[in-house]
Length: 371
Image 1 (spheres, rainbow, N blue to C red):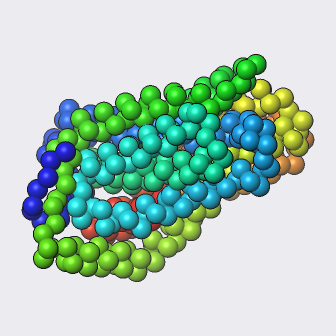
Image 2 (cartoon, rainbow, N blue to C red; image 1 turned 90 degrees about the vertical axis):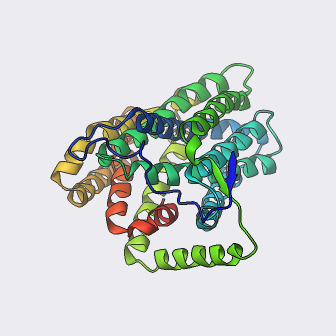
């Protein structure tokens, strides 16, 4: 990682590799494709972490001998990790390049996964989710900011967010396969997570090596940079669209995490499902999201992003009622799958809308707060 004494790092301007080769073409050069592939893999790694939690929570409850109320502290730690990342993101961007921010995020995720491999005491297990949340927040924010500026961004955003759902799809299968063995050592799943996180670090450092820089601060520059960061945060939070989009995705992401994290325990406790079999239900939801993000990206763009978001939300409410009111596990699995399908495009669509609503200089900060 190199250092420089130049002005604050501009982490969000596209380099020559990242810009389209010809204005009239959506074709990118090899360097840009490598960066997009790396962004996809970063989202895939985040998906493995998020998608596996729902399958592992019942085993955590039984192994740690805790209640659902206690295990839910994990979600509080995750939330605090994202808040910490949102607050520090703008300040760090005054000194770190795009590659450095992505590498920092990848390393933070690896730390969290390594600490889980030996089934630490539950308080420390909770802290590991704070680390992974910080890492995911940095990776998501800066990968989104980069991809949102490429030619044909709505397609690439759909692909990188489909990669996240691909990780969410793989996670429950691997986690349930390991956890459901007779001599269950569910925490061994995180050895798999350590492996993919290590690959993520290598890819990030290679693909974004030209922005893997630290800008040294001189004594006179430090107050100026902190002032610039505070002004940027103030400017960002002054936009009404930032708050409106934040509230929408506060509830949207909350619903996604709730479904992923609690559907297994709900079907086991309320619908009397078999734990080993119910562990695969999150995969049905995530598989639906994966297909939805790939298949619905084009019609969402063609028919109008705002109009389609309203339509998807109405359909999702109906499917949620089916899941809740029909006391049948098969019906629940089908409803969850289609629920994932119609809500899948919402995240990438929000990124696309955000880059249109927010001023250019506020993109990274605004997306960090919203998502």
